[in-house]
Length: 204
Image 1: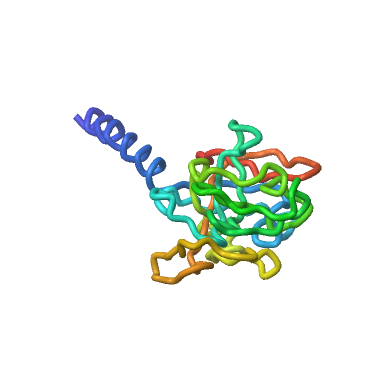
Image 2: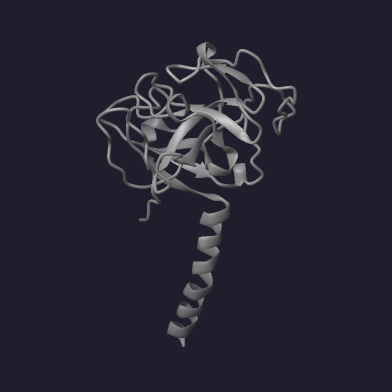
């Protein structure tokens, strides 16, 4: 019978699909202005990005990576930011309670590219690497925005000093890596002040 065969295929396919989403990654919609100009540079166009869970499976993140993470302020919310400093680095803050911060072990310092319009480490401090859920690697929609997301730290936000343990990328490079990054899918609402890109799974 064709129907039982089809049903069996569906029943076998669902776990595989869930596993792929859980281990490999998924597409997400990003709204808000805190990551401009890297994401959503035009307020009339919304970027969809690929969020790679696989890329952060060992917490192997680099300075400059654009990542999705669970918000330290609201565990029910996911945000997307750029890593500008890793453990051991000393960073000059922007409006944080102290002018300079040495990032503690197991943590990183994240910021939005749109300075002054982002709720990030300058508000809540260093974040645990355990809160990172994925890395944004490509913009996949709209077609006019198809591109890789390079891992680069803005020159004005480079750490004052780097931790003793040099971070080695998959290509053997040290310090600021040349990895690419990605984010997760979903519908979100755009805050009016200190906008934060929220992400939820985007299901067709």
